[in-house]
Every structure is written in C-alpha cells, then in structure tokens.
Image 1 (cartoon, rainbow, N blue to C red):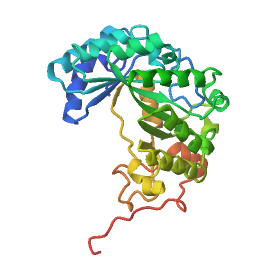
Image 2 (image 1 turned 90 degrees about the vertical axis):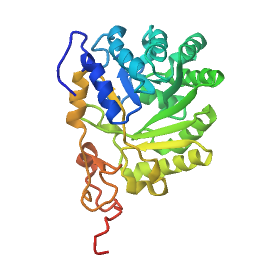
Image 3 (image 1 turned 30 degrees about the vertical axis):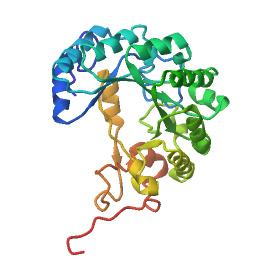
Length: 326
C-alpha cells in the first residue's frame, strides 16, 4: 500500500478506485473497509489496541470513489465494514444502503461484537438497509470468562441477545473466535454454544502477538491449544457447520487441515495500523524448504510464538516434498 496520506487520515482512500481495479486483477470478490476506531469492549488481545479511541470516524463521503468504481464495473461482490466496533456508527445503515444501491455491491457484511444488535430496532434497521451477513466475535462459552476477555460484564448477554435478533431476521452469521490462553481449554463448550446460537459458520484464529505490551499472557502453546481446538472442530463439523482456521500450522490440524485458510481480503485502514501490522506480521517454519504445504496455504508459525515457545521442530509433522527421483 502507498504511504501517501490525505486530510481524512485514511490510508490510501484517495486511491480507492485504483485499489478496486487492482483487486479485479487478483480476482478478489470482497473488500474490507475500517470505519471506526471506537469500541464498547476492551478485548485483552485486540489487534487494534493502539488505535482504539485515538482517531475520529472518517467521513462516509470518502467511500464514494469505491461506490462509483464498483457501481460502474461491478468488480466486487461483498463489502465488509469493520472497526473496532462498526455498529457504533449512527450512519451505518445509510452507508450499507448506498453500498447495495449505487455502490453495486451484492452483499454487505459487518464485523461486530454483536452487542448493539441486542437492540431489536437497530438490528432490523441494519438488516433492512442491506446488511445480511454478520461476522460476530464470540470468545467464551459463558459470561464470567467472556467478561475477563472482553473487559465488559455485559458483553456476553448482549451478544447472546444480538444473535437472537439476527436469527429472527434470517441473517447469515459466522462466529469469530481468537484462540488464546484464556479460552483454549473450553473451546468444545464454546463450539456447542455456537451450535445453539444458530451460527452457519465458525472461524478460529490463532492469537498473534505483534508487540503490544500486556498481551503476552494470551499466547498459548500449540500442545495446549490444539487438542481442544480439534475437538471443537469435530463437534461443529459433525453438526454441518463450515469451519475455518487461521494461522495454525496445517500439519498439526490433522484431518481438519482442509479448514486452514489464511487469506484475507484487501483491507483499507489507517497507515499507522497497516505499517504496524506489516512490521509484526512475520511467519516462518523450520521445514519451509521441505514441506509441500508451506507457502501454499500454510504460513507456519508466527515470530511472536517462536520467540515464546521455540520453532516446535519436534512437534511439527511436515508433508515432505517428493524428489524428482522418487
């Protein structure tokens, strides 16, 4: 991404049309746009922690170049609106309506903790404005642990009620869970909650420590996180849910290796975050030159994990590349 700034404070939004055209060449059908740096939770592993409440919401007018380009060429199918917590924007329904109208997007998805969706009027207004897909954070199977993770005693109950509203509206819902020291042991119970709440799909993200002070205690060794994670995936797939895992070594997912998908759509966000993420987004594997999956869907281990637990060379089970002679 270009480092050029503009008065709005957004990263590369003055080049939005250029980015839309570039993504066409890469056959990407989704675009993520960060619309706020405010949040009503304080998750202990939040990747946006340094940006939270540091910046005002960008003016919705800067979406217009994206809407013009996509409305003209219909290059993107899905617009994903994110934050911090995007439901805190009072103009979210208006933005969604423009996206599916002149913006030419078929689908609008939001990334959310689901808390404000406990308000039936807001949930219906967003749904009727064209937001039909909801990527909802669920990090614990019960309220006490959820509060310890999210920093809010109300977040679990509000998310639970928000999911009730989305079910009643017939919305598509996908869960978003960061696998960390605090919740790994109860992932099977969390999986049952996801089933009970009516999720259609579930995503599990390995916690990535990219240098934020105070987040180190969320790191967990793979020997401790993988057994409950695999049990949770077993339960979910057994009930017909699609499951995606991110940033785990493929070889350690066993029969669920096909759930690994580290791809992320192009993200439009402030330069400060993009630069920090780029600096800390380093992966590798001691078997990188030998394994058929590394660099072809699997990124190995994050540098923050290796610094804490080592390169796991005795734990990893690489699928060796066959030699030409074999």
